[in-house]
Image (cartoon, rainbow, N blue to C red):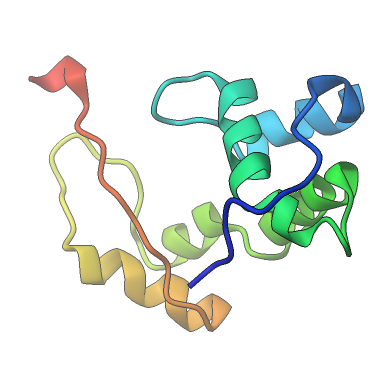
Length: 118
């Protein structure tokens, strides 16, 4: 389990340099609601505060950026022939397997229904 909800400095957007914000919009966006700032605030307040003895807010988000760069999930899936397609579907295990092979970690994935197809 991951530590969460520790006491620490609360998230302030001004603590993230603009260059990092623009990079986070690519690497760690809020894919559910589209409110990146609120998403990052929640991640920092829930998990980042627990790492604050080692990583300040900038370092925490820089680390997330570095992790994203070290494992290009889009490329990993593309190499496994898993690419966006209008009719092709994949099983959960089909997607998890190449990610696990490439990263050595088992990802936790959630599916989001495309509202435009409902």
